[in-house]
Image (cartoon, rainbow over all chains, first blue to last red; front, side):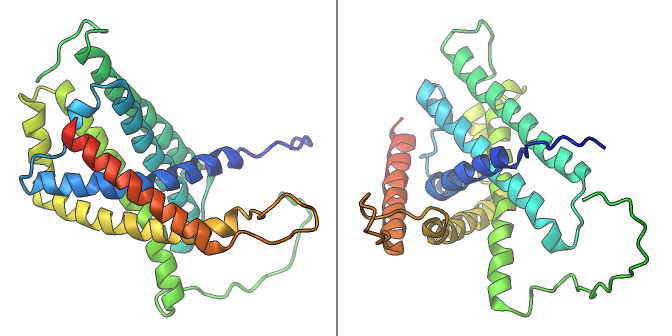
Length: 126
Length: 141
């Protein structure tokens, strides 16, 4: 057992949880309204037009990452309420999951932006 | 808390039912609030799948997005997610003045705090503005 006191990494996760909570409250209602309308046949959710702009890609990346870090942090801390004793394995799975999915979101969102604007010489199924 | 002193103590752990929260409306609201996290993760995964569509061998990404969003299961989950997001916002904004307490002035003898309703109205106002901007941008872009 090491006698050195390690700094907790919790503030980082809490900060991401807080930022994500703001994203969920501010951006998700509008986004979900448009997604529901699109599902009903109203052509209003111009997702790929949005992420073909750098600011749109950035916004969508922030929204996806915010939802992930907010949701998975809250799920981790709610395990206790579901009578599941949180173990380091739960922590690894949820937070590595959040990181991997965030990277994946970044690859897809910015990949789409780069390819559609010709910065990457690849073709997409349009 | 590592402790290598041998203990003969046998603490009594009161049995807790899995539905411990169901008898109090306060804890039901608490569990619903925590439950909104699952919907937030669902929306993130849904957006991730949508973004991945043009990378897959699917002809016509825009049509595929409409197909995903008009799927009945996805539609119902989106509807629940919308309610969850608004409920989350309601709880989140009410908790904000407790998380960050701000004074009216910087004068040392003035300890008046900014009232809770300023935060709540301000945050709902910002949400209304953000909603308007997102709807306009995504419709017109």
